[in-house]
Amino acid sequence: MEHSLYAILWYFLIYAFLGWCLEVIFCTVRTGKWVNRGFLNGPVCPIYGFGMVIVLLALEPLAHRPLALFVGSALLTSTLELVTGWALKTLFHTTWWDYSKQKFNLGGYICLKFSLAWGLVGMFAVKVLHPPVNRFVEWMPRPVGLALLVLWLAVFVADVAVTLRTLIGLERDLGELEKVVAALRKGSDAISRNLGDAALAADEKLEEGRQALPQKLAELEARRDFLQARILDTRLFGAARLMKAFPAMKDLRHSELLAELKETLHERLHR
Image (cartoon, rainbow, N blue to C red; front, top):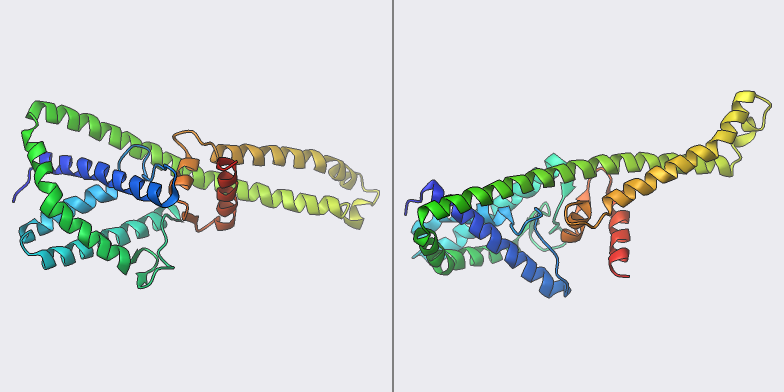
């Protein structure tokens, strides 16, 4: 079946929304708490939208061949998950999910258990879910459909821009925070040693440096607290939402620092 660009864009948005619903339900059942599991702020998971569009375009002719549809869905969606995980890690130096503890995994990006699950989901979507979705898209009056599509895509693009800005800001803040923490540790060590024997000498510059150090440490502490507060801000748009949505998220450059911040966030949320 041939699909117009109009229909493909609608499929992408609908399945991105349905994928978000699936993720939220899965995590709510598993953890007992509601979490916005989307990479974006809005109720969409783009990887589901892309995955279903790829499956439909490539495998819809196999709808009456269940085994081929299952295998094709598993392979295509797993490949998409692998490429997406690798791209996010390469671009943002961050891993968002980790299957390394699962059997038969590949780099922690994909594993056999979830690949089989995606195969079943793909079969269900093509054979059961897509026919009513397709009828809905065809039923919608074209002017109304176009207006809603443009509006939804505009919101989607804006959400992508906001999320990218958040990710860039998080990487910047983590880098600065790591430097501030290192400077604080170095300064505290210097104070504990009383600046060493050299600081006790009569040299005027050394004496001035010894007296100025506590003030410098206070400034660093204030900067550290500010950066931590900005990262852990739990408002709708921010890094804290991403840390809640992806508890397995790891930053390759600042892994220990991010782990400490996630632990602090967890303690605040469960007080």
